[in-house]
Length: 452
Image (cartoon, rainbow, N blue to C red; front, side, top):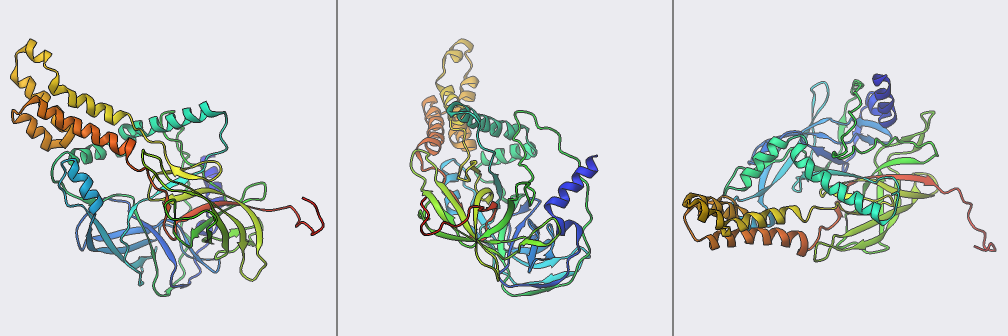
């Protein structure tokens, strides 16, 4: 039963990628390629980088490169990450952080054949978060507040229970020392464009692998995003598209015209094409609100009202944004509005404030009479502000007031970034993959003499 259900999901999600061999053809210049790495890599010049395609690539409704095709490249430069350096120095971390510039230049096909290509350098790599719009919210204000608190609690618990918790602990310990190794994080993604056309040979069909259904998550775990089929029973379509221009809550304006290019064809039940790859969604930004001080995040909403199919009349459609990739961990509501996820603004400042108060707690020292206990409290207070640097200062036998001041500095810095600093902006780069639920409008056009 599990095998049949998994096969049905595979058929609905990737009808061509799962069943058909690639036909071969010409990959046009300017084709966007979304790439991601699956392992941590050293941060060094010349480092080989092996990534894979996040999405299949089509041209003229023909599959040219299946999802997970290997793409090879290497790090060609390391650029200074100035903003991260400044923030790290304020916390006692003097590591000279860098951003890698990666040049990808080779497809590796399933039979091992290598196909060279030319592309631009990729400099803005970051882990990709997939935001998925939930179903319409139930309940009123209190229910929405409860759901927000539950999301925050799940995020906090996932730090200690989610996959990779051991690695997260090691990386946290690294941040407490003044200098530590750097790496390119697992899951880092880049979007590049081919500079010239590339001839691709046909490939055999990838095997369909039946995957067991994941276990039901515990209530403290984040629910998995639903698998969206390409077609919904009511006649709507789930369309994968790439934005033709960047959008941002900081720079976009209400009413700004936008376009997105359909990245994968949508098929009818009889395998004829309903929406061809390369069609254009035309719409506008409906709300853009920049991030502001006191942690108020940016807000961005956009929608599409027309579908332009090549060699056909433009269709009027109703759309809703149901998914989007982002370099920031954002959330979509049921109307498709993008804003940052609720963040825990309380726990860390309180913990740091309690640590900072330890050097001033002299009662136990008087009872126990141990100077070593006082040094330990000084070390705890210093660690709250400047990590290992603060710990060394605390252990050096300095004044408890000095150690407490360092700790309160750390608590104040955490409070500032969470409550006073400008909130998170919402932005989507050019070629960002979005998912749109599209429904043709069934109402007939109004006649000139018809009253609304």
